[in-house]
Image (tube, rainbow, N blue to C red; front, side, top):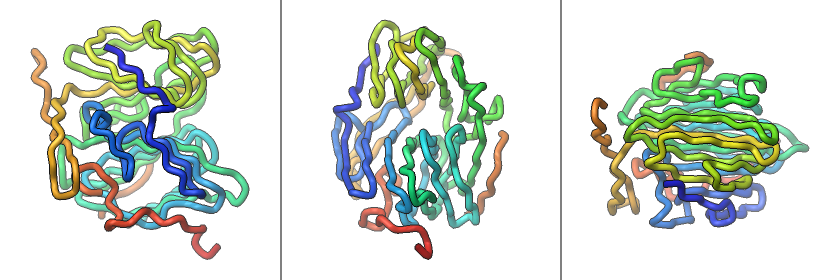
Length: 288
């Protein structure tokens, strides 16, 4: 099964300083049919105007991966980390038992274009931690480069979930292939360009939920950048909670079933943003 999620069908929020497109339910955008996909909870495509950003806000029990498409993003958190993320770098923050952080566009001239990804952890209440790793263009050109995994293999950042995230840059006609193990699921997000996934066409902003497919072939129709998620088999059931709709994830019972810098010491459990009941404020850079 390959179910296409058109980019034009995503939730959209226009905050002036921020344009945000939500693949899955997030903040004021709610669609009961789009609450995530087998542990993948959020893919937000954000464009942040120069000198603007997200003020200090909190998260809990979520694996947050940030991938920059253009520009830069300055990160500061309650663990003492302060870094600038640029294209080709994967930033991973495990929120665990609770962490505060802020994110700003450090440029006064150029907008920042990014993807923020939330993955449900398979363990809760861990010590918050941070990691950031650069993946050169040549390692992603014409191939699926592992950038996040449960064990940090191949120099990927480490996440608390049996999931793997791959990034690729493809020229027209180039193809990459990926085999899915029994009971595994996948999600493809096209960040730029256009591709064909097992004969189905996707454009920039489109995504695809994938299940019961043994082999995936992705062929670029034009220059393309994509992210491919190899996800665990999880039963997903939506439940009512005091904070709204939450998800309970249980392992699928299939037969036979790093590198970087940062330090850790340090959302709501339903995966909704936890800003104390308020939106993240639009702020200029500190002192600006």
